[in-house]
Length: 164
Image 1: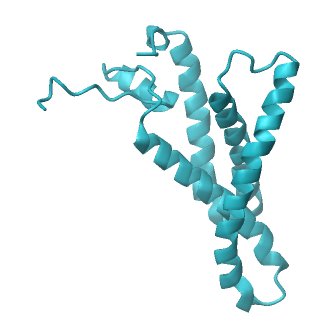
Image 2 (image 1 turned 90 degrees about the vertical axis):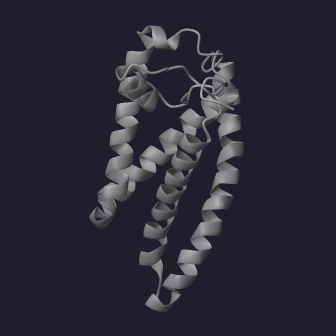
C-alpha cells in the first residue's frame, strides 16, 4: 500500500482535531482512533485509581496493608467502572425522559458523564493531595482545552461532514 491509499488520520477528541486544523490538516471526526482511546482510557483509569487509593490509604490501621490496598484498588476501579456504566445508562434514560441528550448518541452521553465524574475525581485528588497535582492538573487543563477546541470547531467548517 502506498501513501496515496492511506486514509488520513482522523481524531475523536476536539483538541487534536483543532491542532490538526491549525496546521492545515484534516480535522474530521473519527470514531476509530485507537491511540486517543487508549491514552484517554488509561489516563482516566489512573485518575480513578489514585482517587480510590488516596481515600483508602489514610483509613489503614498499619502501613503493612498498603501493598494489599494498592493491588485491590486496581480491581475496585474495574468494578467501579462496571457499576458506573450501568448507573450512567440509567441516568441517560432519565435525562432522555426530560428531553436532555435526545439527539446525542448513548455512547457519547456515556463519555460525557464519565468525563464529568473523572474530572470531579481529578479535582478532589488535586485538592486533597498536592503531591499528585501534576496528573490532576494536566487532566483539568486538557479537559478545558478540549472544551474550548470543541466550541471553536462547532463554529468552523471542520464540524460539518464528519461522518465520512
